Image 1 (cartoon, rainbow, N blue to C red):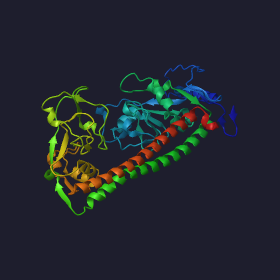
Image 2 (tube, rainbow, N blue to C red):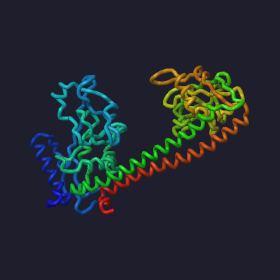
Image 3 (cartoon, rainbow, N blue to C red):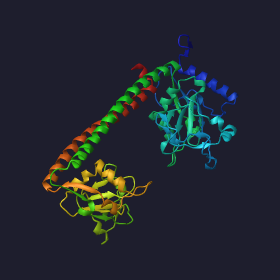
Image 4 (cartoon, rainbow, N blue to C red):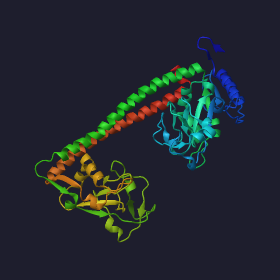
Amino acid sequence: MINAKTNNFDSGSELLDLLLNEKKKLISKKVIIDKKDNNSYPIIDVPFNIPANWVWCYLSDISLIQEGPGIRKHQYQNSGIQFLTVTNILEDSVDLEKSKKYISKEQYSKIYSHFTIKRGDIVTACSGGSWGKSAIYELHDKIILNTSTLRLRFFNDRGNNRYLFYLTKTKYFKDSLRSYNTGQQPNYGYFHYSKILIPLPSRHNQDRIVSILDEAFAAIAKAKANTEQNLKNAKELLESYLQSVFENKGDGWEEKTLGEVADVEYGYTDKSTGEGDYRYIRITDIDKNGELISQDKKYIKYTKEAENFLLEDNDLLMARTGATFAKVLLYKDLEPSIFASYLIRIKFKVKIINDLYWYYTKTKDYWDQANGLSSGAAQPHFNGAAVKKVIFSYPNSTNEQKELIKKFETLSAETKKLEVNYQQKLNDLEELKKSLLQKAFNGELLTA
């Protein structure tokens, strides 16, 4: 039955009938291809309970599902019509600057024009590490689909496309796709999407759900932005204080190059395995905070030569290259360990407590020097000769060094507490989004 006031169908089953009819029209006009889905109704084995006036249906019976073509590298052009890649698809937005690849306007007109993405289309990545990311295309740029990208849209916009968009964000939707994954590399297409079961309410109820989610998600986004800023401020608090201490040197401070006060030692080269006498610490074992990663440990067998690279408690290790370039680890003697060749051990020849230098490596001054002294553009390298040129200021008195370290440790502990609290708030906000989505698609959101 049609509600005269809203001009909407009162039930999901009536809307489904309309959408099935729209699908037939599009097939008859050859706007879409008849994939011979042969879906049967009613659906008996349903994923979860929904309100009585909703209906379960197949995605392919209510929505356009179009995969991109397989454009080959030899077809790429420097200009023309851009095509979408999985790199362009972020969660909730499309960034055309992330990847810019084109085909010629001639090829577009002759072969690919029917893959043109329209404003309001839901675009999603359907393979690789980005699979499942989805966004509504809201740009005016002419762009087409390509391999590993796909677009969705209610047939003739008879449903609210934002309802469908929010549905792609649910754990249920992604788990439905994931159930088809049989290999290491996720790769989904029309067949997998077409068989996803969709809870379909009336258009009026879709609009209500979208309105509630839009408002709630906007509030969550604002709270998340504030929390992320607070988290950033907490992390910068220690760095700012450290910078201030090392910049404003007091009486009795020395300023030396690292080469004047320390020796640098390159690590040991060997083949690491899952078993052995010593843990083998590599650059990949140091995280972005200069902490030791406990997972994926590798070990090596005992040799007389390896003993020369045995680590002692509180040794300083610096990554020469890679993702953690110039990060410094303050090693704690948890187990007998050997450091690998892409790490440098810094051994002070004068009375400098290692912890003091480790805190110094958290400052802007240190990173300005590290970046300035490094070589290599694509992959920076910080070799021993460059490390020796780092200028380091420190108090001569070991007692003053200890006092500073104690202050640093206290502030570090406080900022870590703040970081944990703010990170927990971010996690809670993400859980709230998941909870709202779950309630939205089983009908609870309309009765809450």
